Image (cartoon, rainbow, N blue to C red; front, side, top):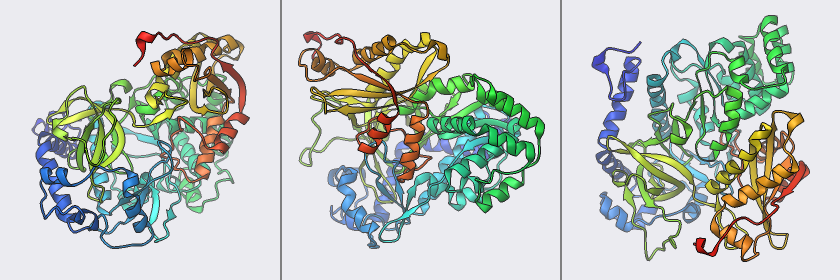
Length: 598
């Protein structure tokens, strides 16, 4: 029940007094976004003014924006790599931050190359926890009654590594889950998980997933929301249930635990809920044994109100598969964050995935925005870019995000392209567009992630009449052929094996993808003969599961793993090629006319 109207918020009536406080904080921060930003920058520069990095630029004690922008260069990770390497090797002097670097947070390493080490300080955990504390108060405005049940969230940690200098290096979510902020969090009836901490914190992904799934099955009727960090993680959990339901139902029927689960802490925590329940075992077995897994989430967890997963950016391609397994449940994208910084939250979390916008919280860091022009030649140190402040961005325009953090990143280019969709009070709201990178290039063509995804979406429309969808894909620029050509690997979900797509249909998908690509690509195909026909290689079901397992075995985080949309690493290409079941080429040239040259 909502609290008294005295505590009401412009966002809506809060569910409790704690929520009212959180919503008031959001209003205060967003109403005074520019003032908050000015204060944040002054705090960062005052605190870190004596660091080696800032001393190079002779700020002279000034903490104002004008001096900062005129003296401090805009940088990328490569620019900062020497300083980061020194810290990693054990240099404890104040290189980037006046506060000691507590650990490194590793990027997922699948968006644009090898993993990066992001320095962080202990107090950043407080800042991340603050943003987490705002999520449920906003969600409670949209979905009432979440205090009457639990959330089934598939969350995982990665065993950390250490740098030569002894600092931990681990994914940001592993850092958070292993912190006291998470492990000793106070009880909150609106945010109770079915997964015990011990299961989440188990570094063995099979044991962790098995225990979390088993607990979720035992508490199936209490589950009100199902989630993971990324949509791909939730689909991995469904795949896990598909492969392991017989053993899971055996454990439920007998009240015993799979001997493959050997972690003593996991066994102990699962033992607290483990009991013989033949009726539940029969129910789960009957549902999982059915040929169709359509709506399996709502069949197993009937009270689920929404899915809590990120489905923006590259994750959008999972939406049809999530809809299939959930019967079209709403998909909530609650927050926008990265290893470098936590940025903001979605104030309308039940909006359609295509309409998701994130409100940047101005207290998290100092934010600047580089106007994004794909045709711009770029900038140099001699001709620096003109960046826009948070409160001065314009609706409809696209920008690259640039951050300055308390932990010691100064005017750092994150690489995310955002489009301004509106404002909440004076704080802008952004739609995530894409990572700023080029995925595929054979000649003068350049195909980015968003364009490739759109081409896959358009081509997959041809599979609808066969009741088939693309559940996963990646790509490869094959320069071994003359001319080189794009190779697209597809994993398909064929819902009616007797009516699977014909060779002709899949060849048509190749052409449909080419028709969706930019004019430079089509010119290379038609006029210049610099690009060969696009090829689709259909791989066995479960291939991308193997690809993820391979990445995890090489150090990727199960929480942050995202399927690479382009591959070039030979072992990965060989793995994909060993799973190919059919090969298809574009049967003709795409449309292109000289008038459409750009």
